[in-house]
Amino acid sequence: MTDATVADVPVASGASRGLWGEAARRFLNHRLATLGLVMLAIIVLACVLAPLIAHYGPNDIDLRGRNQPPGGVHWLGTDGTGRDIFARILYGGRISLSVGFIAVAISAAIGIFVGAVAGYFGGKVDLLLMGLIDMVLTFPRLVIIIAFVAVVGPSIFNTMVVIGLLSWPSIARLTRGEILSLRNQEFVLAARSLGTSPSVIILEHILPNVLSPILVAITLDVATVILLEASLSFLGLGAQAPAASWGNMLRDARTLSILESQPWMWIPPGAMIAIAVLSINFVGDGLRDALDPQHIMGGGAK
Image 1 (cartoon, rainbow, N blue to C red):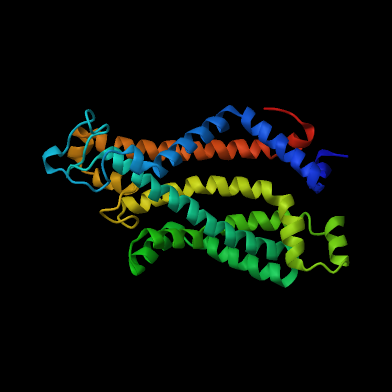
Image 2: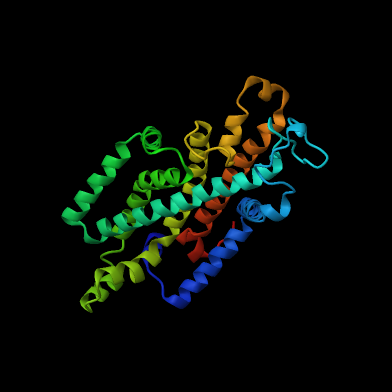
């Protein structure tokens, strides 16, 4: 049996658990992926535990302690109103990461649904949905997001929704392609002959066998959305004052005097964006290698 054939053969539940175990082993042997997962876990945990870690609230103002450099009780210094940079980094991470995860969850739900319906039913349904996908892909996403947020008003909720509603086509096309390769396999035809409903066939028989590439795409999309949220917040269309996000912290530090003489106001949020995105990309690369069917079936290690 060739490698290509092996990659297309669905596996039973017991064998599936073995393959997922092999994938986990391969992932843990991927040093950059493991490093990225550890770094991401530390960032998420620190943001969740922000009230226990930070000595100050993100909006606590101390006019006598304005523009203090890092050191003493303010580990990363203070901004122009005396707010603690370290506290704002942790609380801002809650918003930036939440936008990434929730917006991608919205886009993944839409994309998987549309792609599954198009791939399974084919014909006119596929033609109609692919036309919709192509139409959405022609939209300049950033321009549409900016226009939408400007009309309905800037807020984190609006940012999450509009990003999610415009980011699903790539996942839909990926899901459709994977399902097209499986919809005429013997196990699908057998389920149809038994009168199994299309929804059950898609959810219980097909999707589990195409989950690997979709999971990788979703992971990498989180990094893209975090960067997009930072861009919108920098433009004033994301998180609104006094709430902190990594993007609007960079916006607050955009003046030339701050860039030259107060680097502690822009280096920490910029570094957190870079570290978070890099960590997620490392995890995505590790998942891509670990979930490669040819590598799993061959049992090779990275």
